[in-house]
Image (cartoon, rainbow, N blue to C red; front, side, top):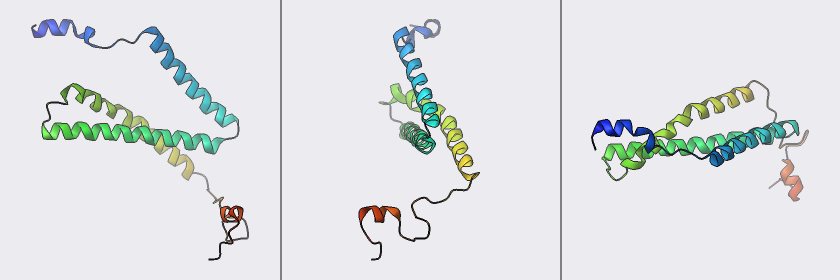
Length: 138
């Protein structure tokens, strides 16, 4: 097969998701957005933002791992990994999203004063020690 024939058939090489898969993905995205908004309205803003930040960092780490794996394959000239090389390189598309989400989260948390909640007022003993029955004095 010549290169012109491959160029003309290029669309047939991509996987096209069925309408069921596409609908399922849209449903999952909408469920995630509704869960986030529901968590904010339920008064669990700290837990909601914490979950959002944890998930963002988790997928950020996966994206960095994919890029590192693709870089290692390229440096050592591994021919066995060529079919999956583009998959690992495509992980880089999530990095700007993750960096934007994490920077907006950190700038929002720095803009307000944060008071420590693990110490009770007037006592240097952490509340978790009091709950466990420990005195906190060594």
